[in-house]
Length: 171
Ligand SMILES: [Zn+2]
Image 1 (cartoon, helix red, strand yellow):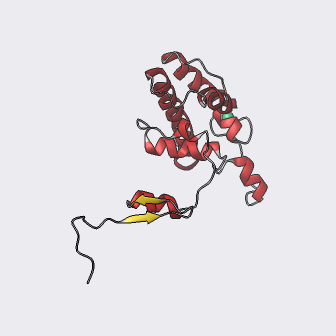
Image 2: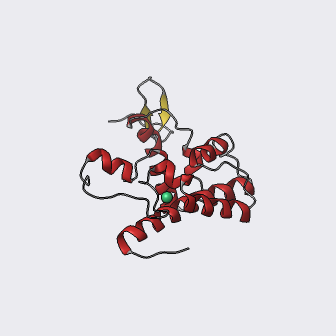
Image 3: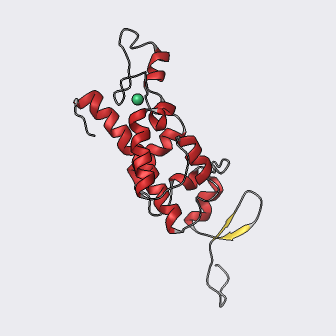
């Protein structure tokens, strides 16, 4: 027979370091999941007002994970194809070219910056370097800058793909 006393039973979780915690699924998950270093860029991309599919694309851009022409050349799959940026027709595209080394995309970014009075650099790495230290702030200017930056990246990538795969153009 279990001892009868006045207190209710309680469930606890003992972590690897021997500390006893009140049980919750979150405590257990934090205890058993693999963890890595906190990535500073995380707060630039993911925030409460972000548009998830825009943020996901920006996350890929930051890891230079998009299938751009410079990567396709390395794979030598399309060695017979002439790869030129569909936005400016000048050279093969890459992350640095598309965001915003390309004349077309830099024009879009300049226009967006002007419309929303955003004072940051002219390529995506400069923008990320400026945004990273202030990205956790919840002030309107930082949130708007992150939303506009992320949307600009998204629509430039969308326009690039539409020109390649759908043969449609927008100004
Ligand atoms: Zn271009």
